[in-house]
Length: 123
Image (cartoon, rainbow, N blue to C red; front, side, top):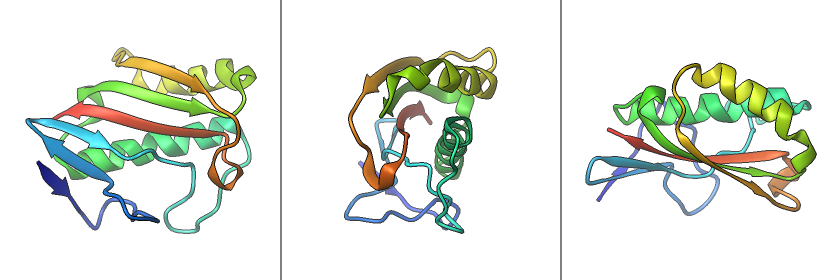
């Protein structure tokens, strides 16, 4: 097991790693739509979704992989009625690549965010 740490990755706000590699698989921590530089949270679900996907991409790139190597995504959504809007951003982000995916409706997410995403990727 190897903890991946890079200045290019967002910094964790707690006692956890952003990414761990084990046997050639990258595991990312759940990402909230909080801008790493400004700490702002976008208002729209589209902007929140885009931001978390870009954060996941930044993390796995810093670990030596790419979004086309993502195997699985888990999306935690505070309001399942937003699903079609989330899926539109997700589909545009990934294009022809279709990782396996789970969508988990939740109640409230930390800081009032509407979405949190984690990923598994091949290195």
